[in-house]
Length: 413
Image (tube, rainbow, N blue to C red; front, side):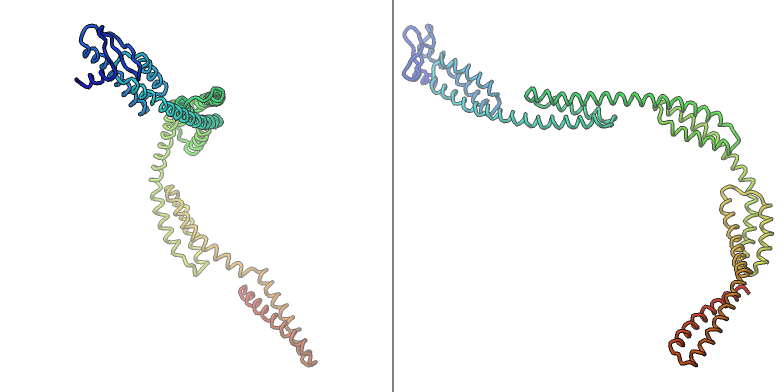
């Protein structure tokens, strides 16, 4: 007999009328009838049913212990199989199979508790994160980041939807704050862009006018006055602010084009004039050689006469190209400054008032020294040592002043 047959003999029997029984402990229960066929075939049929139940329990054990099933699904499956084992329609070790099935109940209880703890932990994590999301949303709503704020709030909303719900009151309170922040930001953003749109429209009107004015000046040949007008128009353009981008670009192209036309014509005219003035620069270069040859000055009168002659020829030479003006003028001014500096030095030395003051100082010091010398002789004759010492020190001081005064006076003579 096969293993199936052995299990059938151990846990079941068949009556003469084909009634099949299963033994559960000391009790027998009818599982069915098999009137057609032998007793072995009858037991084999109901033993096969038991093997089917046993296989289901085996699968359930694997899924429960691996955590592949939720506790509720597992409990439902156990109840279904327990019901089949309570009213068995199979032959086998019903007691052992029932025990295996019941051994899963504590496992499910532990899993249920574990899931409850994990759920509680996730709820607290969700509470913390949702509070942080609300705080971040309120910060965005209180700011003016109109470019990135909407995207950040959209990302926060997507994250919120992925988080587990909290208890209703807490979840509703946080959601109310989050939703309020999003609404406040959206309204402020719309108001901001409405103002921006209005400002851009105003800028468009101003810049259209400026473009027309710039185009009207493009053919002017009044170089100085028109260049000043263009500078004023440019200042107005910058102060106007941005217009709508596509319009702003088109208007700038017109405005800049008119400027380029005018300044291009001016530069061409200046280049033509500079070409005409190039010969004048050659003449002034030669005059500079003459002027710079006067340095260093040894004869002021001769240098002044020569420089006056050079200056007359310099003025007669006329204008030079603009890019050479500063260089040439700086060189001629250097020679002029050397001559003037030397003139001033001589004037200071020959200043009549200063010469008279210097002579007067010399005379006063000489008179004072003569008096001190007379007093010194008297003190020596009287043997007054202290007075002699004081007068000698005073005499030495006055003598040093006299030497300095005489040197100064000599410079004016």
